[in-house]
Length: 478
Image (cartoon, rainbow, N blue to C red; front, side, top):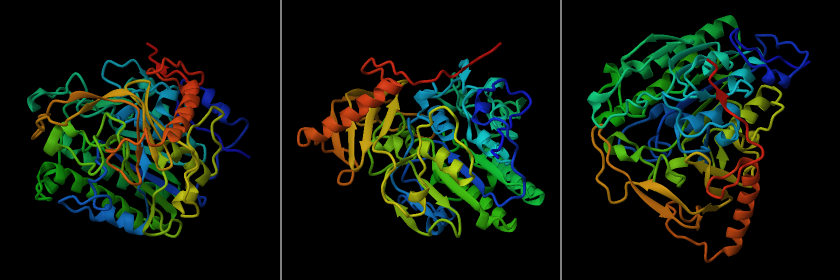
């Protein structure tokens, strides 16, 4: 018997329920594993000890790497907030479901009722579900988490700087709503408490479900280290490396609290914990931004520094300790992987991701995809990776090369540059410095063919391809 998708009372859509027909929820208290995903904002690839050499300590994340699995070529589908979250929660390229870039305060669209989120996937198996942190898939009531599979939501509906409040000076910050469920509970909330408060909510949720004997999915999308940076009084100055170091060490503290709570609740051996980021560092902020060194560029570009992000997974007894996997994988792959893990059926509509459990367990060393595709600036296909090769198509991009860096929360100014057809061997040239397109025209032709095939399905504004298999986002119903 298949389990049911369970939606909260205010849900407007029913197409996702075509996922299953005539079914019953699974019994709580079964051996189903718990899942925790900590998804941070604008973290650079090199910002944690297991992936780089930062001048501060990240002992809890380093412990995750030592006791679990590192995917060293893990990607987001677009190098920006809303698109990454759409891909994480649905298993789709963001442009398949009409979520591009970062949704702003004037946006009148968001995630569609017919899309199946991880929250709904886990609800279909009788899980308790919660999100504490940043949502950013639509701030109107019909798009909020409790309409899309989450029992609890406490946090912010979009980024902590959201336009039109993004400043050229810190004094320009505007009102930022904090929400409990679908109700605003305050404005100008103390952002210094965000990481601490969301962590404490998560710890309490873990203990509550452990006491009740209910399997749970906990989603902790911390707003940090997205500017403006804030850290709690308890951890201010802890890194000795300025505010950015303090913020990262507080995120590391958060992971330590989550792992400690799982241990105290006796759930360590039955919980998969995942850590990643929504895109690379926002380089214009200088000392308030992270690093993707030695990779090229950062957030807002499809060079490696913008789309390759840290990934750690820990599950004692189920995942090997200290394993590093070099095969490419992407945020879209988590949805089908977790569906397999909890024996939940996939939606009836297309899902772009593929199961990467064999990569996480070390049973396979090859990606399940022949290629991954990276879009940016609405529906422009900028680059594609297949195996060791990365092909960029001609496009413009922003860069801080030759520009004065930002400092203490005041951004530097990007300039615009452009790239033509460019082929890079990422195994030999992680910094994407040596264009081999003229040396390997056969590789260029093959990757271009793969891209042309995907353009037919998902479109590409750079080539005026419309795409035949895209779905509309949700539109505001007044």
